[in-house]
Image (cartoon, rainbow, N blue to C red; front, side, top):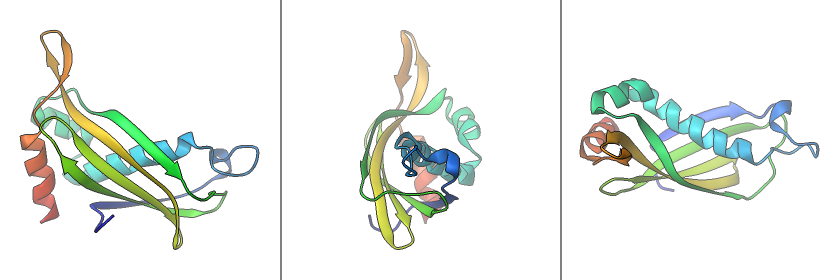
Length: 138
């Protein structure tokens, strides 16, 4: 990952861990989501962005993660996210989680801007959302 678009930090707590004392893997996906929504607060938050773009949500289309080192109770984590790719109706976000200098997990999400269509919820064009999110990086 080059320069992160956003950085979020959290501390692992006892409740984040499984009986072996290491982070229960679904929490890593939850931290990706928290980092993403923390980034959106720079633009007024998820609800405000959806209202501005006439959308129902900025939803998840795909997610993957790689677990490289165990994380334990008390570890301070830094989660970096970077937008890797913009497509017509989807964008890809890369994540890196570090504990100190150690890379502990990586992952990516594909997200879209969803609106109500005639037959249900559909992915919308991302031009206006991309313009807003990229203008903040300059």
